[in-house]
Image (cartoon, rainbow, N blue to C red; front, side, top):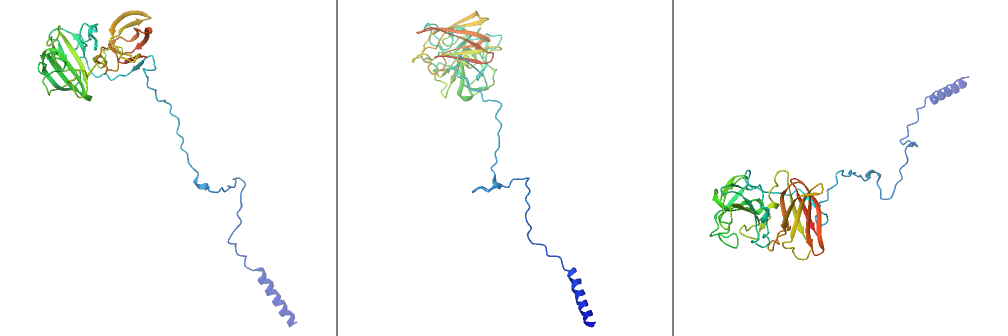
Length: 319
């Protein structure tokens, strides 16, 4: 019996300790469970998935860049021209240039080529600065020459403006400024007269460009630089048809209303000596509307109808 009790005791201890064994330790690595909701990336040689290139999308511009008008290929171009100068004669004076003796014309060979324009006004009419600047000359040209001859302009004033532009006022009866004076646009600088080679009382007005304002052949057409009168525009004509310049070719410019002629301008292209000018004729302060340009060429009558807008320049080139 004692042996039997010893055996049962040992068996009981063994069974009790077997039921209280410690739980197995948690494994250091667990299996990775992949869900089928995302595709498994595939490796590609030389490609790192984390360095995908980025692209910035720039929306197209809704406002295209305008193409400048080319008068060499178009029938005409209407542009915003940089008119620089106010008229040197103000109302009630006559502020329109004389059409009978325009810039670079000769009145059919009767007079010397004109290097400016004329404002026909009574003796003593006020003359005003066309723009702000410095007076560089204010005296008689008896000893200082600004043309092929002395005493050609008589009493003359020359004002230097920005960008080597100059305005010249000639045949004055009175000079009211002196060299070195600073003037503002519209300042009264002199009075109309008939000094020098003038044949009557008027203002001779020039625009010169360049470093040498004494150069007689540095003139520009004043009508191309004078601000058009209110509600008017300017017309520029170039004849580029021949290998040589078309000197003093007669031109007819007709203003049209509803296709009917209401006014006709008779002029000519520039005379010899004005090859530095790109254009061949200019008419300023024209009412807006349609204009017919006509002239005879070796191939026959040439004509073109072009519009003109107030405050702008219409450029026409015949090729």
